[in-house]
Length: 351
Image (tube, rainbow, N blue to C red):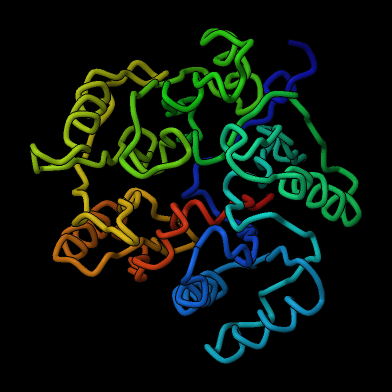
């Protein structure tokens, strides 16, 4: 590969790095929340309100009518509207983590870039003809305000929720997703690693195994394990040996405990409990505390109306003592098979 972001000094910062903004796509697809889409909005609007307290929020909407409805709802919860910006960039769905771009900074501190990965709705499971255009819409808008923005287009399928980085050369992902033949069937593991190195600016890929029950993404890592510092991850762990998540999460935990970072250091692993099982319409949902989002000065994590919510909050507070830890009920949102990290994509601050 030539003329890649890494060759030019670009890298993806860790999520805890300071943000310029968070990008979202406003929920509207009734097929993603069959029978209960209206129930998700109280928690969704609270999420936006919490974000707007500490950074800009850019929201993709279908049209002017949706923009007016969303703005009215956010005003009613007293969100800071001066920090909320709407863009009429139509989407199929709300999962901006996956259809949004990857935002990169340059080590020289002088330039920024967007990576426009291909998007195929998690292996062609759902319509995606609008979602796949979102990175270009965002790039065009940013470039119209600052022509120093650069655009990279690798030409392969990748989703933001399938990777996590520490900003220091290391990347977490899963075999079950990135090596799934419904993504890039003509690429080997080694070839996919080369794309990860080149387009995220990393030196080391840490591979985990299977995802959790109910996850229609084939095992996104943002439900399993997340970097919380350059040398530490939290790992979702199920304590009930009869639960179907027990074995895959134990295997991932064993893998993480053997991992070394690009620096040569041993990876530190902090266990994060799983919530009680969440079902709706006889379907198990992919409820996980690992789907938290790091906003400026905040950790926003999903709660599920169970005792483990408190334990998860305690662990996150210990890991992020300088951030406010905010739990928001995701019991209805997760019926869409994702939560707050899946809904959001960070744009790092340019210095």
